[in-house]
Length: 164
Image (cartoon, rainbow, N blue to C red; front, top):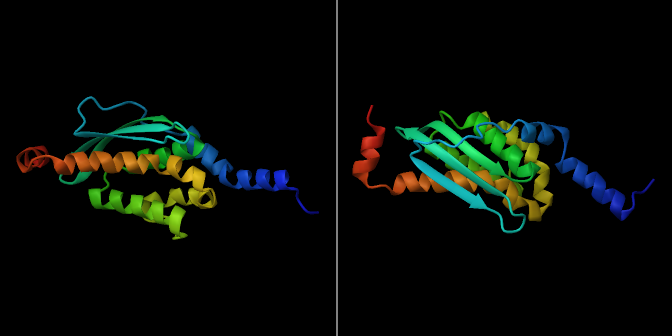
């Protein structure tokens, strides 16, 4: 039996809003902001109105503390949930790489991130929905903005923040 246009669209939506994405979105953790953050990054999608703000605490180029507020759709919530579960202990380079991997996965049909961020593979079906890319990438944009803030600090301040 052939599916009609609306039935096919519903089946496609079932693929991107699958049970695992719903579970991840429901498990969004670290909803509290960090009062003593080294940097804060915010990303906003004009298309859907979603906003994610992240706070980073760092030491020697690694994340030691993380907080976030997530006002996003299920896709943004799922990505933020994986980030919250895996970010502490990550290096700046690793975080930039996972952001690049997510953009490549969605925009260039590249494979999903691996390693500690392998759960992001659940978002692979989103690549077929360009309008959903921005909301899915919000947490990565926010984290990179926070990293940019840390890296832009004068060397004296950065050195002071990484001393034991």
